[in-house]
Amino acid sequence: MHDTQIEDWLKLAGGKENIKLVEHNKGTTTLVLKDSTQLNMSVLASTDVVADIRATGEQCHLAIRDESSRIYNALQGVGAAEGTALQEAGHAKKNRFSILHFVSDVFRPLMPAILGAAVIKILLAIITLMDTYGSADSSALMDSQTFTIFSIIGNSVIYLLPVLVAISTAYRLKSNIYVAASIGGLMFHPEMTMMMSGEQDVHFLGLPLVSQPAFYTTAIWVILTICAAAYLERAVQRISPKFSKGMVAPFLTLLILVPLVFMILGPVGTWIDEYLPEALDSLLANAPVVTIMLLGALFSLMLVMGLHYWLLAIIINEMVMEGGSMVIAAMIVAIIGQAGASLANGLRSKEPASRRLAFWATGTALLGVVEPALYAVNMRKRSSFYSALLGGAAGGLYFGLLSVKAFAIVGNPSLVSLPLFIEEGSLNLLHTCIGVVIAFVVSGGLTYWMAGKGQKSGQAAPKASIE
Image 1 (tube, rainbow, N blue to C red):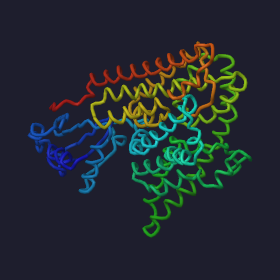
Image 2: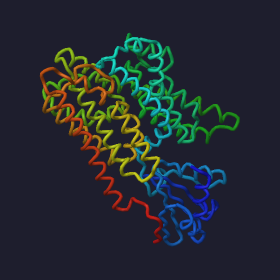
Image 3: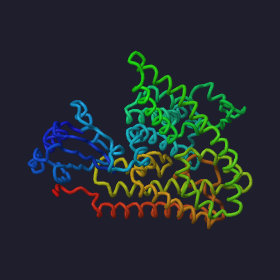
Image 4: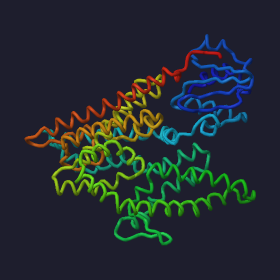
């Protein structure tokens, strides 16, 4: 944000010394002012500033639409330099903390890196598709080390995502980012990677650890771990002697918290590893329509919680036994549902930065990189997140009724993966396209409608209103 824009907001508020509190909640930054008589209303007429001003008795609130938190971060920095009391909306008494909104706020600063890497991955996927189904022979390029290096570049951000998420969470909670990075990168240690390779049973303090390293580094578990680390760090800092303040907190965090996470997630992962594939196999055999509908709805949640890694065994079993996979079909409608909700968010948003992010996230989700749409766009509003799940369910129901299958294994299915649904002598590809459209339209339509209802009920900020 430009310095002149910050100055305009400060002039309207009557100067930074008149700001008592800065809050952010549900796409709005609110300035709580000390003295309402200090408001400089002439700023509204002389600049492009748009605000909702509410004065009740001695209290005055200046609400600014700020879906990307840019204004909040800028004003927070200005106020912090002068000792202004700053507080997150989740800590305010009148506001409810939202884990979905918090996760989205953690991911937003990471979006430039993720989107940049996503574009590289998409270009490489298109080249691969042209090599497979096109007339031009590009096998020399596909087999070259140059192509491999570009593939590594495209995957590097996702590979290091646990570390980036840990740093972003710690930065947001104002805790030690280096300790957080150490926790996020634990599974990248070569010895840990070898131990978790599945060649041997792994135990920690007598408790079994599932041999699935990616499960422990899923974003939601990393975020929750860093939140606990931040709380522990503050508690230890309060009681530590001055000479050991910089050492005791990191020591206890790594010594107590990391083992505790293993003691919790290890048995949970082992239980999931034992029962989830078996349960899904049974459901697919006895109630395939309901199972694919549920997978279409819940696959996004499985992504968030790291449970999608267990689907690979089921997909391989389907390929061997049936020749095709209905699970991959459920995955594609879930991802397309996220894309539809993201597009609707972009169309409804009134902030240029949020619109750009939503449109870019829509494009990457349609082409197989779902993280920007899932975490940075749809999680910010529960209505759009739930609409995306419903869109996936609608597409999954259609696929289940018509037994739509994919005939090759792919990581994150997308529009680029549609040729994998071609079956000679059947309408499988046509039904795949119809199901994808259903998921996109249902999720996008529900999100657009619900966002419109929210704006009509008073979420949109007028130029100025004084109560």
